[in-house]
Amino acid sequence: VQLQASGGGLVQAGDSLRLSCAASGRTFSSAVMGWFRQVPGKEREFVAAISRSGEKTYYADSVKGRFTISRDNAKNTVYLQMNSLKPEDTAVYYCAADQRPLSLRVPAEYDYWGQGTLVTVSS
Image 1 (tube, rainbow, N blue to C red):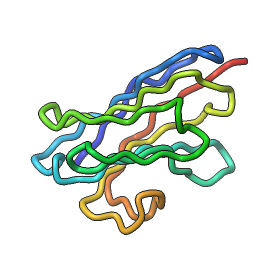
Image 2 (tube, rainbow, N blue to C red):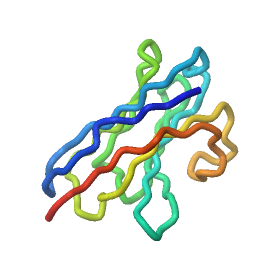
Image 3 (cartoon, one colour):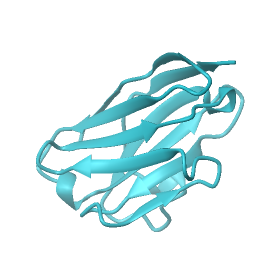
């Protein structure tokens, strides 16, 4: 599985952005998908994850109620809608995929990663 993330940019606090992650390969619909983010000097942290069918979603407490993860298996794409952005959301955002992650919130459980897209939120 190859992943290509896009949609990052520079926005002001309170604005919205939608990130996309396009996947190649026929196994997309059988993969759990996740979004993570990382700032320089810090560990990569979990943001959101979605089950294979899209019925179940999981969020970090810091983004719950502001971010929404979704997927379109027909388009092999997962999305992260980010609303009410805050300066502390500034990071490089990565999408990830794995067939059977033992823990959805642990980066090491995901085998496939996109290249990252930078989100900068100014105050």
